[in-house]
Each structure stands twice: as structure tokens, then as C-alpha cells.
Image 1 (cartoon, helix red, strand yellow):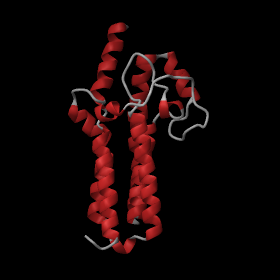
Image 2 (cartoon, helix red, strand yellow; image 1 turned 90 degrees about the horizontal axis):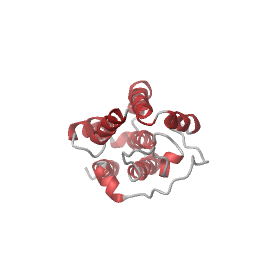
Image 3 (cartoon, helix red, strand yellow; image 1 turned 180 degrees about the vertical axis):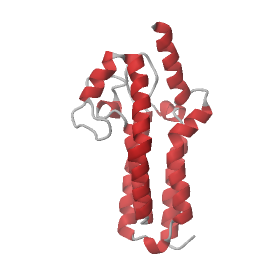
Length: 201
């Protein structure tokens, strides 16, 4: 049991700040990068307006801040993470990614892409991640995780935090969890969409 637990923790580390860089890029950054590329390619000034541009930028920024908050608490240990945003929802990174994608589509006025992205997220991305991660965490933490999962919502945060934890947010964890690349992509996308709206590119 101890050996199995260590193997599961090693898999967790490789997926987030470990040695397997391809796995990190594939499962954690591709959805945002694909959204950025599509927006940069298809965005047209004629489809954009100032209200949606500002509102979308705020939503995307909130999504990225949520991801940064979550990554600053995300560390693979023998204890289940219930600090920071994890005290309010089980998947802050997924919620953050959803908000970023939604915000980008709103900024660009690309409602067709918004619909497509929501379908992909709802029918493929989130269900797949929920099943894989649920099984993995259950294998590592057992009944402790089941109790947590029953009490804490998956994507929409609860106002009441779950349990108590003295773990603090850490910028080093944000870097280790490869969130800086996502942050730069979000900033670049917002900047490019603004420049397209103003007709500078």
C-alpha cells in the first residue's frame, strides 16, 4: 500500500512540476494555447465592441488569478490539499481555464467559438479530467478524499471553506507548476485583442 501510494504521488509530481515536461504541456496548457491561437487567427475588429472587450478581459484576468492562486497551493504531498481555493472548490484550475476561454471569446465577439469551446469543455475536457483525477486522488487519499469530494463543489466555489489549513500561497509553486507560461499567454492574448480592436494590428 505504501509503495502504491508513492507511485501515485510520483505520477502526480510528473504531471505538475515534475520531470515529464511533455505531460505538463499536453494536459495543463494546450486548451489555453489553442484558444489563444484561434483567437489571434480569427478575431476581427468588426465583431468586437468595447463593452465585451473590457468585460471579457476582466473575466479572463479573474480566471488567470484563480489559476495562480491555485497553483500557489498545489503541491503533491501525503496530505490532501484543502488550502487556498481548494477549500472552496475541488478544481480551481479547471474553473480558471473555463473563465479564461470564456473571456477571450467574449473579447473577440466570437460567439461561435464560445459555443464550440463550451461544448468541448463540458463534453470532453472536464469529464475526462474529473474521472482521471478523481480515481487518482481516491487511490492516494482514500476515504479522506471521498469526504472532501462530498463536501466541496467541483467547479462553482462554496462561500464556506472546507476544514482548516495553515499552508500558505507560494510563488515558487506557481513557477514549479508551469503557470508562468499560461500567464504570459493570457497577457499576450489580451494585448493582441486590444490592438486588433484599436486597429493597430
